Length: 256
Image (cartoon, rainbow, N blue to C red):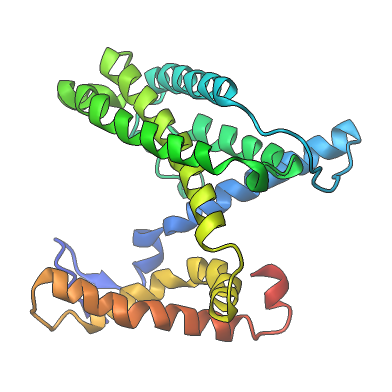
């Protein structure tokens, strides 16, 4: 079966795995690698996992500022060797340029869980984080893009500015989202719990569902924004329905 995709080549189901690769599941692959490394570190150091410890103070503004600057510096130096957009054939990763950020946030997340920071970070810190992220976007982002593609790396000063903006926004938005969801959605309702239970399975199975839905709608010719909205209205419930059925398979809930 050959379908026209709007690309320069026809689409066949035999080509599908090669064309799509692992898709967004590269992020799940990276997390599994980090989890494996964490498990090996625990075994090598004879450290047993311990429950979260409450009563420990979360990091202050000075510590967060130092983390942002350190991450920006490491990212800038890393991008000299591995610029943003550099592809890698390993495990389908789109680019390894953000590896310092991914790894540092994975470690920080584990520490934050152990020290119960997700519940004890002050709400005011979340507001400050969002404010700083907005200010950095207004001041630093245009400056970083002033040299066209220089922000991608290679040692240009625009890359250093972009690294500082990227690190600031990542930390600031993280703080803001944690405290905002903690405030507005402290306890999930019945629907929220259902959606949460299916969320990872949706992440795994949504790719072929969206592709099939896009092919089913290919004969329609409304405005692109309207077509996108129609695909979302149909696709999101459909993905969660399929995920629910998949998790009904024996042993699936323990994996997905």
